[in-house]
Image (tube, rainbow, N blue to C red; front, side):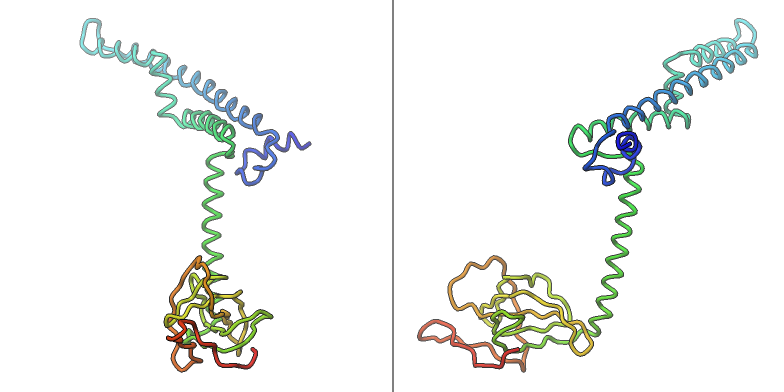
Length: 259
């Protein structure tokens, strides 16, 4: 049953069958066959109507030798031309458009399958991606609104001294009411010419509000900075250690209680 089910499944967007491509080739062949069938049947019907109309025009034409008769003859010849009739059917009739789409869809899907980037029916694929994009935007908006509600009003950062945070060594913890862009694990923070390394950020509810806590540890040796962010150290908060101008190294911070 997997193979026949796979044939119809492969008409759907590729995300439903990308890993299991059983029946994809047959699905493409059926699409092509449907396009050819619809096209030939529609073309024969269109050609028949064109012939009837041409005969009607010829019977209702002007007198022999008159200008109207010459124009009618030209019109009859044009309408009876197989090439022009086929082009008119393919480009100017709904049935021709359907046949065009089915054939082009089969060709396009064959190319994507050969390139190892398979697609399902292009219209269904496009609709699926549009719906997913809109759904994703809606979910992101709802999540942002929920987070803003949980964080409450934006307030200035608080800085706490500590020896450990979440079981790991840290000298300070920055408690922020909003997440800070670029403040990720192992990022170097430069504040008042002092270099600090960010530990693993944690989100904690404090006094009923969601807060993002960034543990910071002073860098006292030479390390490679993979990413650097600059930070203005808040006033009225535990001060950073000063630079020992004689030795050229950072003086140790004051002892503090463990958070």
